[in-house]
Image 1 (tube, one colour):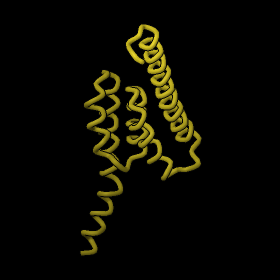
Image 2 (image 1 turned 30 degrees about the horizontal axis):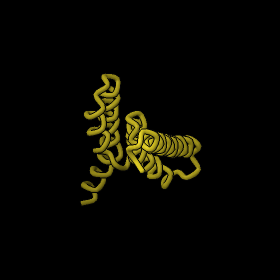
Image 3 (image 1 turned 45 degrees about the horizontal axis):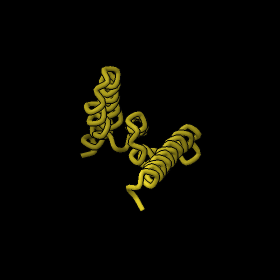
Length: 122
């Protein structure tokens, strides 16, 4: 029984991180090929790996999916709240979301004024 625990501990200590590293390397290859869906699928299979979570947040930011990016970066900050990198990325995603909302409101206001000026909206 003691021997089995030792073998399992060694397996967990050495082999599992090796497999994770290979899969993260595979995800990077998908990213180099611009195959974001395969990269995301591979990365999502490692929900506790900080590198995988950060990369998912970066992909979400690249795809301008600000809410998803914000969620990934917040998850990282729960583990490492003082990380300047994670805080910077969270702030950037939040800023881009705010700017996108502001641009939408500005465009909507312009449409309303245009409709009023042509008599379509009273």
